[in-house]
Image 1 (cartoon, rainbow, N blue to C red):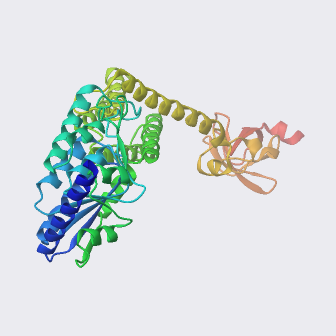
Image 2: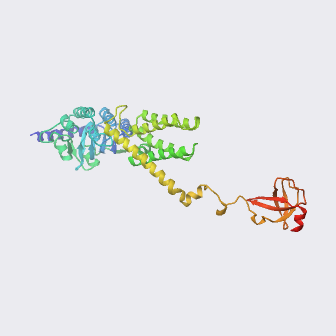
Image 3: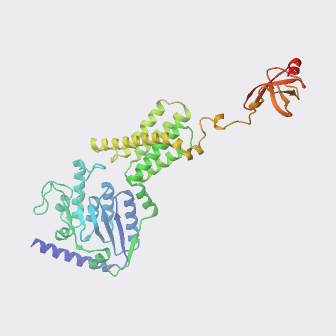
Length: 452
C-alpha cells in the first residue's frame, strides 16, 4: 500500500512539474556538478543560477557526479539552489555521495540514471577518510533533514545517509550508513524518475520542447581545479622547498628564488580560492618568508630571525595540509598525518638534493654550464702561452729593465722582468725562471758573457 501511494505521489509530482515546465518558454540550463565540491564550484554554480534567472529559464538541471567535498561549500550551493525561484532538477548521472547527496536533496526534483547511487553523507576527515567528530555529524544531519523537509521528502531517510545510528526497518540497520541505488531511491520517493540521460530526463519532466543551454566553467575555474589536484600540489610543494634551499645556498634573488616563489603561488593560490586553505595560514607562511629575507639581506648570518622564519614557514605549510575550519582543528590523528606528509616531503627533498649533488656535476651538460674548481696546466689550461724552453738561455737587453723591459734572445724579442735591479740597455742577460707568462732574467757580467 505504501509503495502504491509513493508511486502515485511521484506521478503527481511529474504532472505538476510538467505544468511548471510549460509555464515558461525560456531555455533549460544544464550545469555540471563534478569532481570535488569546493569554493570554485560554488562560484561556478552561483554564476549559472544568476545567468539562468536573467534568461528567465524554464528550469536548471544539475548533472551530479561527485563523491563529495567541503561541507561549507556544499551548504552554500544548497542555499543557492533553495533560494532560486526557478524549478531545479538534480540528475544523478553516476554518484551523488556525501556533499553531492545534499546538493541533490536541495533540488525540487531528483532524477537518477540506472546504476547510479546516492547517499553516504557522513562527514569525514581530510586525508584519513575516518568519520569526523559528532559536532560535524550533527551539523550535517541538520542540513540533510532541513533540506529534505524543504522539498517534501522523508527526513529520516536523509538522516540515515549521515548517521549510522539511525535505523529504518526493512531499509538500513543500526551501524550502517544509508546509500540508495536508483531503483531504491525511486521506490522510497527520494527520486522522482529514472532516465538514462539528461535529454531523456527532460522528456520525462516535460521540458523536451525547450532549448538546452550547457553552462560551462570559465578557463580560470578549470585551471584552478586542475592545479588543486594532489599530484600537482605535491610537485609545487617540492618546487617551493627545493627552490628555497638552493636560494639559501646562493644568497640573492636568482633562479632558485623565482622557482620557490612560483611553487608557493601555485601551492597556496588554488587551495585558498578553493576554500582548502585559510587566510591566516597563507599569512603565517609569508611572515616566515619575510623573516628569512630579513636574515639574509638585513642582518647577514643565521640567527633568531632565520630560525623563526623557517619555523613560521613550516607551521604555515603544516596548517595548510590540515583540513581545519578557522582555528578549529580535527583530531590528533589527522594532525599527525599532516606532519607525516610534510616530513615525507622534506625527506624526499633531501634525498633529491643528495642525488643531484652527487651525480649532476658529473654530467656533460652540467660541466658545460658550470666552471670547474681548478684549471690546471696538466689539463691544458693556461693564462697565456708559456716559454718554458727559454730557461737558461742568454740574450741582450733591448731596453732598460726597470725592472720590466724587452730583451732579445735568438733573434726574438720577449717581455721580461729583471730580478729586482736596474739593467741598462745592451746588457747581456740570462733567463733564470719562467712562470706562466712571466720571464725572469738576471744580468751577466762581461766575463760570464764572454765565456759563454
